[in-house]
Image 1 (cartoon, rainbow, N blue to C red):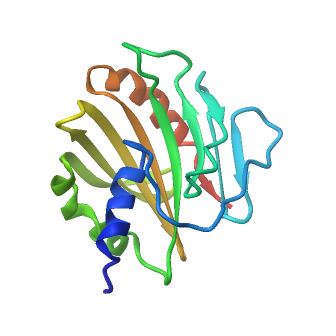
Image 2: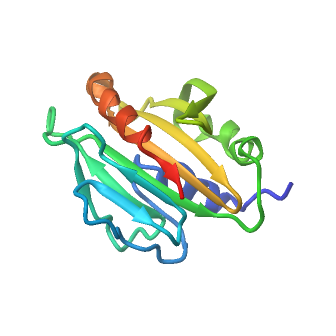
Length: 182
């Protein structure tokens, strides 16, 4: 198994939503659905929506091309607006979910994250991998769900302040349940 260079690992960990830093990736399509809160991309091969939440769908900044779409909480808590990002990683070759997750799992701690739990999950018939994390320095908490199909990995990341994370998590889980490969 060929490991990506360290710079890509750094990009993966922090580009998932904590600091929204991303590396060079092809430009991704913008939403094509007319339904509010829904993102559909035939080119990327998936769709997702806000489901039964009040979260706001936003177009991601063009400066971060690996982020396909973003959902944000309708209000801030303690000056912070929780966010749910959908990041796409185009792979050079097809990898299994386990192979893809193994590439970065051991490195979370090195970047200031403590893994609270990690486990395989099933989201509406789709195999995924769930990782709950805390950034001990920034007092942020994240839930990531990794999904892989062919040469595309999608990382769903919910992030919020640690103290209000459980409140945001209900909406994030609802949005994650809306994910479908096309």
